[in-house]
Image 1 (cartoon, rainbow, N blue to C red):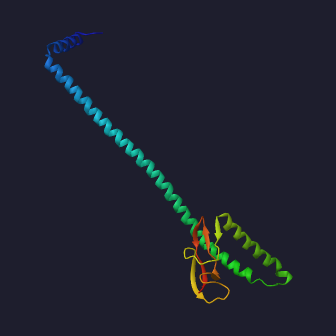
Image 2 (spheres, rainbow, N blue to C red):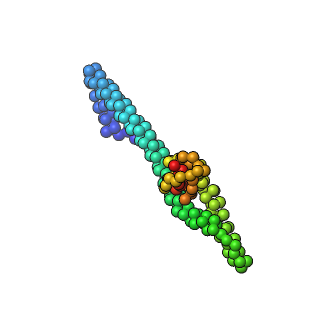
Image 3 (cartoon, rainbow, N blue to C red):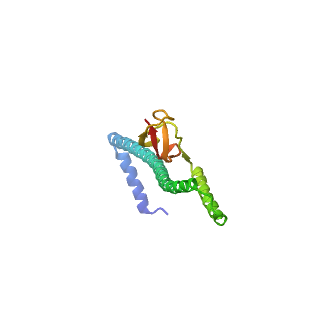
Length: 180
């Protein structure tokens, strides 16, 4: 399928190549070497950009995982802190329970069951009640100092509001009175 034009083109390109002097050939080779060097530099730049972007993406993923975890923990703490007020009210109600007539006994038993359910819920969520022996400003909030013959200075005399921790962090500090 060679036509005369194709044959003429081949002959012309062969003549051009044969007519080139050696200095022109070295220029072409030099241009090719420069082009190759430029390509290598560009390739190295793109590889560096790729490595940085990959590292940035991994750092972003790690940061978002941490942020989501912190948000979830914050939300959990808020909900549990609000539930502690309800548990306090149930604790007060259980402390002041009195003998009730037989027809109201099922009602008080129901209240005790709800109180127990709340306590179990908090325990399963990781909430623990604090110890109340010696005053610790990181765990307790001193509302007053009182004279006490039974307790030494710095010991907790009375707990006015229980304190709780969640995963070894203070969820709510205990409100206490401390011996002078």
